[in-house]
Image (cartoon, rainbow, N blue to C red):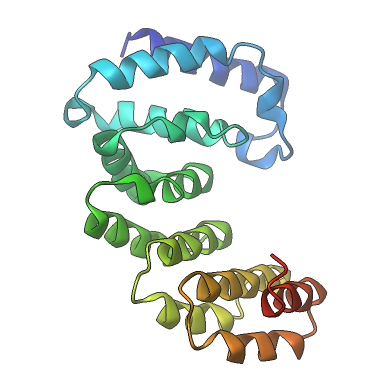
Length: 213
């Protein structure tokens, strides 16, 4: 794994480890933006995906690509330039071994896949991911692709009750997903939202109900 891209990924990783005593997942904030040599990663990444057959990637290489995609979660540039083949293969790898910050970024790119059935299949797996943010973003992407399963997952998300304070955002995602597909269930959930104890949920419900979004 001597390709220039992986050399630059390792440089970033070494920099991160030298800056913080905490594991990278525990640092918080937008710390990755402090790295001054992102362009040294972007250019080799562009060249790599333009010249390498993704089917030839080893698991180690896939995981290093996912690592740097996860760390690029503010600009989301790396995930945005993946072609069909890389996007599919890396999403499959992410589902198996990935991190929340590569999973959700890949989820929001899946609409680009030419094979919409494949996109829906991958999104449904991510909708069932244990991470709250990953499954929430995946639900909204399912709605954009007009999946027939959005209403099923909307009910599941609304009554999940496993994420504490983040349940409010699960419910907000339900409202926007139902609106995206013009669901007949939307009025019911708007009514439930207005009766809830969550202020932001009620605020978003009112905006949706009055078409102020």
